[in-house]
Amino acid sequence: MRDLLRATPVALAFLTALSLPAHAQGIKVAYVQTSVLLEQAPGRAEAEAQFDKETGGYRDQIKRMSDSLNALVADFQKRQATLAAAARETQAKGLQAKEAEFQRRTQELEQKAQGRQNELVQPILDKIKAAIEDVRVEGGYAMIFNADQGSPIVAVDKSLNVTERVLSKLKGTTAAAAPRPSSGGTPAPSGVTRPNP
Image 1 (cartoon, rainbow, N blue to C red):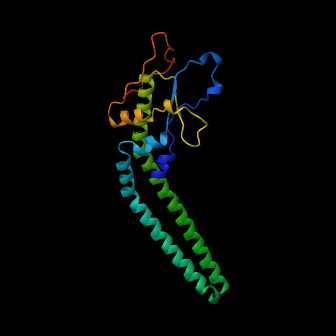
Image 2: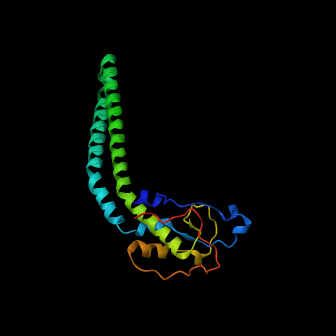
Image 3: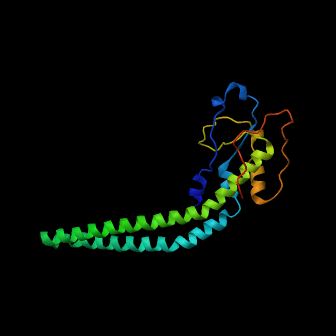
């Protein structure tokens, strides 16, 4: 689950500075590192422990089925030279059917596990998104980018990093107040609203 959490994208608007019109040069932007937010988000460890607890039975069942299938295949391989052609073909078809059933059941269990993981992770992602939006509004930022490795951003001013402020919001602590835009500054972008709690 940890790898999936790190890989899970937080819904952010990915716009590059090159795509901004020339008149938007004064827009205030910042960035976060979503991998840090996901790793340190309150509730992540508990969700991971709950997921591991709930899906342990799935893993055990898959292992038992795999061990059973492997034993049947090994037994067939030892005996196939002594079997008549018709018996060998019948048993080979039986093994193929068991393998297909194993694959079907494994996929079914993996889908259940994935669905449960999504249920456990979604509230954490929602809180991260809300905290990012709060920091964006409070700081007067037009945009907050994700600057994790693999993002389209190749260079960034480290003073624009608001990851710690977002973490403070997530953890319920007060981060250092960000400077508000002056009364003559850039207005807040239209169409952007605070999420409903």
